[in-house]
Length: 141
Ligand code: FE2
Image 1 (cartoon, rainbow, N blue to C red):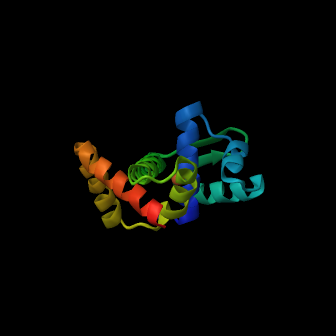
Image 2 (cartoon, helix red, strand yellow; image 1 turned 60 degrees about the vertical axis):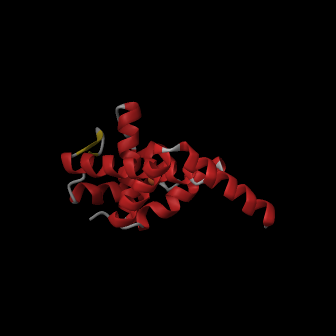
Image 3 (spheres, rainbow, N blue to C red; image 1 turned 90 degrees about the vertical axis):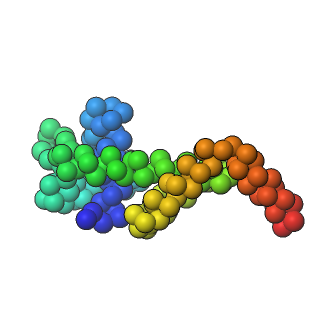
């Protein structure tokens, strides 16, 4: 199992490759707000654990295992964004909050959140009910 920090890297690498077709150390480091030398160290660890293949002057690619995990991480991130959006969290807080919680949920919790999102998606009147309750509580606080 990748550690939370490895998960951040794999998520970032997967996104970069998906969006740009390649992932450079500089872009990975920038996105994660770390020094390129720390990024290189982590990428070497990911290489050792067979999530990526890293060649110093040629960049890196995801192994099938890295691809699978990266895809799962990106999907989990998207689900959690959807969840926070559904329950009415302000747009400006969503990304940061997801980054804070995403590595700390069991697959049980993820599945429950997934069904909750689906529950609201199936019937928008449920969502309206939740929103008006939220507004009511907001006015009371
Ligand atoms: Fe994330």
